[in-house]
Length: 482
Image (tube, rainbow, N blue to C red; front, top):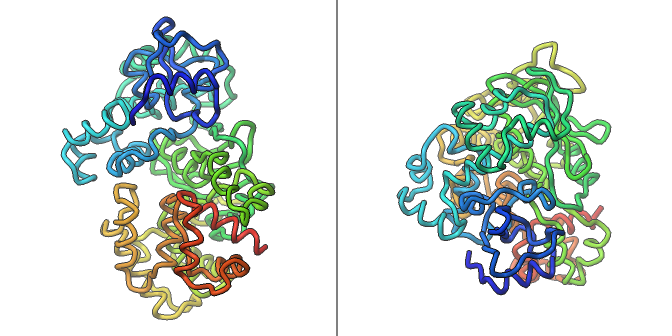
């Protein structure tokens, strides 16, 4: 992204929160980089350089500021609006695409050459894909040092480093301190190596946690998910072991808890939770746009911090969307429970608790499973099997490598999946913030006073003013019916 020095400096002087995360300030006289809202006195203009990402600032030799903590800022809004290829690449990197492969393989998954991918990253992010991944690893390792008692060796491998030596060298270069020095000056949790683990994931305030928890409670997959005491629980697979994940509200974000250590999969688990609970959203920016519409303004004021409930596992969400066609939410939950009981893998006795009894069935399992007698007609059963085969074969990519348009095309190619189902999956499973469902019956009822015709084209025209946050507007519409 193009950063105009004079404009960026004005933003720094104003400390306007709307610029937070859109760029980073490197101060040459101190060697640190900051957020535009840093409370420290603004340096002189001639001593500042501006960078589009934290990784770019770190590659230039700056370390993160200890006052404004740019390394703790969730997400990177500066990456919104980059080229579609870079956006998809960033999703893959966040999911660990460069932990076990190289840039050439990443570029191949994106359908571009590795030289072109490097050029696009330098243009839009200001750093190479490798630098972005290194930054991701270092900041995750710092989080583990500050919040857990895991051994440094465990942290190095959990953060994706090939060796403890490479971890120590890179960590010291980024933070100007060794891992041991960071641990000594920070408080940490009493987590024993190999045992239960707790970690805090940051997000921007506000967050409408009651809505999120309630949404997941009514749409849980019995046996796999549960909501109790205001916390979300589910069965996951991490480091080839079954684990129980708990997510609950905490200060400055949410807290995740795992019954067992997750090793190298821990970063992937955290990324999935961020996606599921929409933790990288900037709710104030979303609310500003939606509140400009007088029709939504009351709901936005009443429910600040609305998040789009996502999915820990995209295939599970696809299954729910297909099963839920033309039936109630309660009926969908009942049938999903039957599918899990018939085709999910039972948990070992020591893990089963609080209604968690099975691992969710995989696409490979359901591709040819006998689904008769579970409350679905033949057409719906065939749609589930077609979708499972498409996911298992890679025809529907769930790894984030495809664009929203490509995903939509792949979903609509499955017999029995129409525009509503594809849009719902795009919104929740693939985090499309602009997904919208103009044919949804609830949307038609919610807009009945201002679009009495209930025609799709008129509803779509009315929703244009909500771009690029139509998915959030959709949730406000659904909530208004309750």
